[in-house]
Image (cartoon, rainbow, N blue to C red; front, side):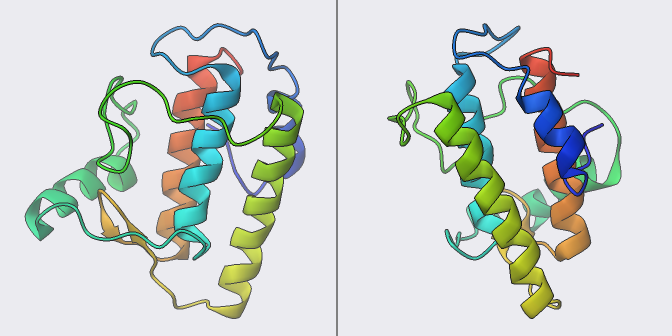
Length: 152
């Protein structure tokens, strides 16, 4: 499993990615995948605050699965904050810029929780998450997408 706190290993894995790398499942391009991960990190570093999208009972059920188990995250799960069809427009000019942006967002995640250790930013499918829960989510989310591109 990816450990987002081990940035050296995380970046070693990401550097294996090529712009034309094909996924084993899904429709994301390599750059879309990296930008997707950065988008999710922005939820946890307070730059892209989210709302609750589900009832508390459903949030808790999803949280119990994602945070509380080691089962693979389901292929094809669609977050309510993603477009219903197709892919979002790319934000960066190339994959290298997208990876640099992801690194910045991860650093901002670290800094956010240094200054706000008791904060619980909202995850759109699981509700409020504390620092350790966000780490667990990101580890599982990154692992899911790294497997998608055979980076693990």
